[in-house]
Length: 115
Length: 114
Image: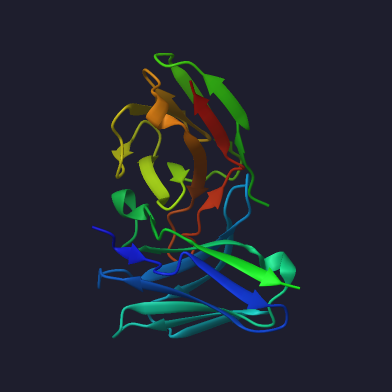
């Protein structure tokens, strides 16, 4: 049972335009969401996160939107740059401490930014 | 800066061999995790540990075991390597404090089992 879903395996965008990556989840107990970026042969690096008490968080070119009623979050990258080309994973968790510290990851979306 | 290091970037092993993958973090994090990444399947959690000597099974623990004798070190053991364990293995660590749940990843170990 996939609790975190990224239904688009890939996305291609022109440099300078907006990239929108989507993520859906099924577990209403999730209270913290994160986006990671991964280049080939490297570990994922943290990009941005959002708590369930917010509906938007912004950090430079990256903005994450959370729609709790739709159980949907999205990552917007504006403007997109060729260096943004990577696999993007969304992840979610619920609760604090002990066995709840694990993240549930989506399957990833490969973003290609064309020069 | 949080640093998570993994003992090898690339490993080639034979079927049936016992394989040890080591992970060390230098930020006094309580939690440590082992994932594998396979194309189209994302990151799947194998095992994690939220304290020294504590371990919890993740989604795909079969064929693996772990050891956490010290806070900074978390080892993944493949008792008898099989070809379906060829994968990218990623270690991560995190704090437990609310608002500090970000997991920090090591560079990964690409394991090929022949």
